[in-house]
Length: 403
Image (cartoon, rainbow, N blue to C red):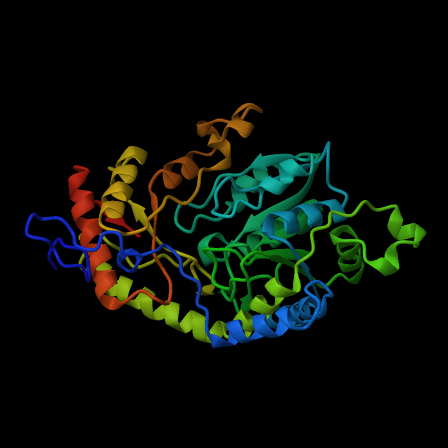
């Protein structure tokens, strides 16, 4: 493939014609919206109420059934879902929560927001999820819970984490803000631990504009979460409930309507994304040093949010930035996978450092997120991979890159 942008003619002077045309830009994410989503939004807008909860209750029921949980509580986002969950368990100042420093949505920031102390646990080098052995070594008498994430769709080490939580009397919470529909040993993500949280913002797979969901089999926990989420009119004169200060963190019927239709279309959405993943895998196969996407033991289905490429050890964080700039120059939206918590100023000021989680530091400096959505064509995938090859050579590191 030549060096010109896919689908763009090259001008005689070497410049691109139509650089201002957004159609030439390959976005990192693009919501898979059909006529069904548009139609349901029209119905809700014409119903005379945007917050009466009818669509939200329907979405909760459908989502709980999808994951296989007894209860689902819709909220305004994944981070607030995690915060409300910690509050519902009474976790706060003086408590410690084991969590990963790595992730895109960074729902684990809720631990700090709750007043509890986040104890950052290093990650598995290959699948980027929390390392159970390192988690076990960090348990103290102050530890109340483990918050483990399914990073970029890959299930965590749930067998080991479940055993650790049981042995040490800890609450096991699942951060599934970056995963939906993935499975681990026959069970769907969201079905592990006492409760799990989801997020419906980009670059996720099921998109509702904004919003999150907490799922659990614990009826009492679900009740506490609903009281924390928002005080309903019927609650205002109830003494027990009015002892709880609500967060006003509910989901609107508009977001719920989008989420409900997206959930019904999820098999179609995932199939379209998997077709693009197949094109990526085929194109990457000719990239020297590339290995197949890693799938850990027990991970049967992995639904990634983005196509995540792990650069080799000869690359540095500055080299990755140079690659991102090269891709951007060709109209390709690429990104790192977020700044790890232990390198963010808030945590540095409280004693964290890059040496605390060496595997995460090494990994985070080299992970590159590439566009993944239904609108990408096979030609665009080839163009992205060819451009990535050229960019890796431009950094002076050759093709020392692997998934």
